[in-house]
Length: 76
Image (cartoon, rainbow, N blue to C red; front, side, top):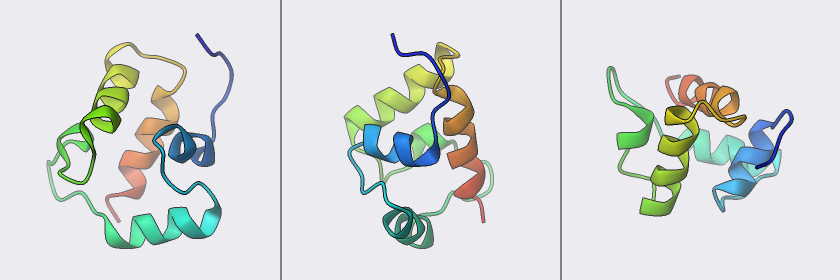
């Protein structure tokens, strides 16, 4: 198990997405969460991405803070 502080760039890389600042900005510009929609229920995740995000939150892993940050960023 990894320990330490993860950045949003680390999370995007872990999810297999472009992880440079431009790629993250582009992702956030084209993906949004509405109202009460749960991050892990969003249709734009693959099954493996959804599982990683769910596990991070359910297990209160060292990824959960940056996953919460992503949730907030997707509600703009």
